[in-house]
Amino acid sequence: MSQNQIGCQTIGCRVTSCRYNDKGSYCELSRIQVEPCCNHCSNSGNPADESLCGSYRPR
Image (cartoon, rainbow, N blue to C red; front, side, top):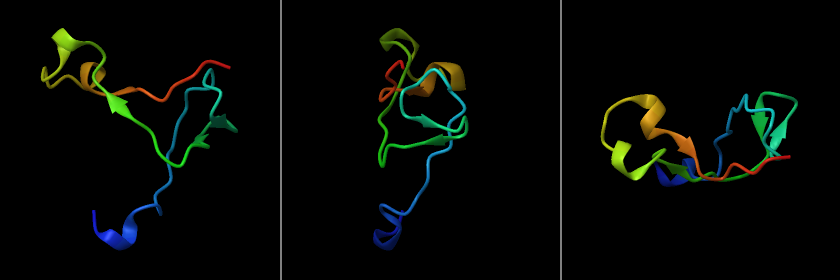
């Protein structure tokens, strides 16, 4: 990512149970932390194992 793009991205999210979800399709946070689902699953190559939103908080 180039330096002039930092802070200009938007985060789409359809997880309506998260307190940061806005209108069912947008994350209100300016930054999220993406983490693997579990330590023994990391590097599996399976998207479901590799892409947990670590910033998720329930409503």
